[in-house]
Image (cartoon, rainbow, N blue to C red; front, top):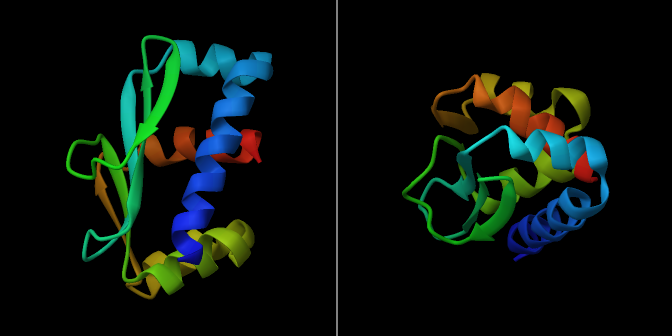
Amino acid sequence: MLFSVLLWILHVAISVAARRNKSLKDMVKVRNSAYVIMTKDGKIGRRFIFKNGRYSSDKLLTDYDMALVFENADIGFKVLAFGGNTGIDDAKNNWDLSILGDDYHMLWFGIVMQMAL
């Protein structure tokens, strides 16, 4: 439940920032890609879509350029909410997180998340 709420808050934050923050607005204009954050079982997650200078989000978890797949919702919440700068790296090292697709997208999406929050 907390993981779903966190993903929804992230969606709202990116949505607001993509409209109000000029730097983020410029970043969104140059990228056409989709990113998914979800649990390993595929029951909880959200897709973040940047296409043609616009941002949107939905719950389709199968079509993405890069996906962060957490072992379970509890781990996902703890890593994203309390992990700090090393949370994602620690989760990868402990096999609690898999990055699917082109992992070079992670840097760009990480910057977007930080700018939004």
